[in-house]
Length: 511
Image (cartoon, rainbow, N blue to C red):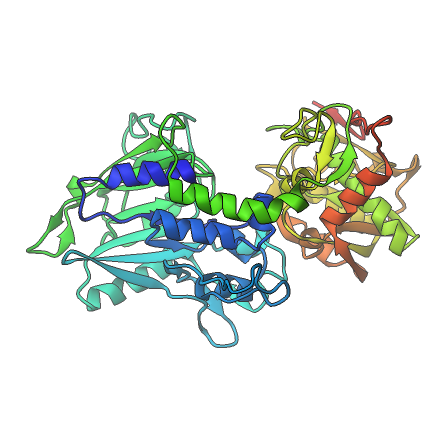
């Protein structure tokens, strides 16, 4: 945030008509410094660095719609209260737009669908949407009572509304994205022709969004690109994304025609810039971070365990990881304390957000795991839930890793000790999970028998395409998943006997 603020302030110099916009996931899955305080520090940082407007992302729903509304409107947290005497959270200075998110009870958008910025006489309309598939990647509780509409149809609806108000310069902020052919932040996306360098959901959306929308600022896939994609009239239109975590920002330059009161489409140019760390930090952001760090440090620096080596989550293409095994084992151990009949645990790989690194991150010493480091691994505040599944259902769950919505990009669940099976990557779809290879403690899974399965609340709601888990019965809702990990590390490690990474060989892979 310190460097991003400096970069943005430098970029604005000499440009009186300048706006700073974003496309969602401003909060959620955050480092302890922000997440411990329900992301109030991040919102305050965005206020200071001058964010003018953002769309809503899927992570804004991690703690549910009421918490999202609090981040917009301000006020103390309903459970944790205010974090300092005499200091009340003021909320976001910028509008968070959710044009395609409908509150089922009222039939209205949860937040404002659009906003109009008057920039020294120039009116620019911004429409904000998140991906229609948000309920598939957020816990069921987080999106309870909400309906998510088609992105392009929603943008087109509000484009007409803006035009009726005399606003013709229109920008769409879309929390959905694409996959560029190159990972370079500044590569020529259109080298093979308009739109040739980009694939993914945003391409289809862009082709459906009204030609009256002048440019599309996108997000979600964490990629960097500046591409043109033909609009429905066949004219090229800029579609941009600035990667993730504030590593880049996109600079968009566009000319405004006073006669038509619209953006001159042919003038729109964009480029991605690196937020380097050779520039000075923004002092006001440093002060803000130091303020919250003072409050967080006593919690963050507490030792919770010891490890003998890096415990990693793996990279692209990883099937099973030592950290995934550790988390699954921790959830099983916790589950057995509240339901001794629990048989196994499953963990979604996307919920593992960082590695546990052996080298010290501060003054704690090598091999020491602090609470802050554990929080970075599991920052979602999910609960550990236990459900009953039949053996047939369990096999269905394992097959959903590589079929249906997960067929193109498999999501391999991390599994607790005792559960084993073979994954045959030479096959396709559900057949990649060899059904008769699934065993628990060496015994074949009985399709007619029942098993008690531990999982986080995100999976329990059918998240990440594991719809069969939502069909489990006799649910028992336990405590926070981070607490389960912390308790396990504390119980299974010491300075003289640190926890060692597993061999990550519970899943046998055939290629």
